[in-house]
Image: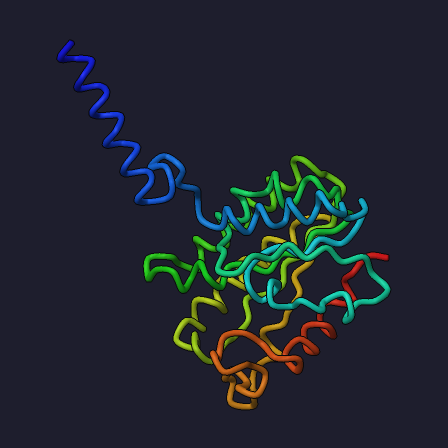
Length: 226
């Protein structure tokens, strides 16, 4: 009888806690879970056609909301999610890469990896990209995989030595692979003094304005598959 009362009391306390917090204690999700659910909801309404060109990665793609207007002759699927790093793209590959069966995957990611911690080196970023590359290649052996270089941002100018090293290592890796390319947006975004061009960015000095995206358009378009 006493045991039953304690069980009942414990259940009442748990219910009260759930009502106060609004969410069950076990309902925690990994980072960016809500972003992925939004993609899934959008796909349930209108699934993108197969054999498109998939843009995947972090906020420089997320904020390129009018990317299709920059490439009107190409079927672009934008699945960038802001703040993400390469391990996040790897974690959600089954949701944001493989279902679309694209003919080409264009990756922009690595910027946030370096900014997340001083312990993340250029070699770490290159290794993470290689892991993503091999994952995609193992499931889609004939797909084109292109990497857009880490861009130089005024707010992250202190990371430029690591960015340059990571870009070089990823470039060197891609030169050894078939159906793969390295797209350099780093160089055209520098001024004559080798520093990030401030006029290409919005107020946060991290994300680009239309002028910055025009540079990306010019750099990326020659690599897109018809």
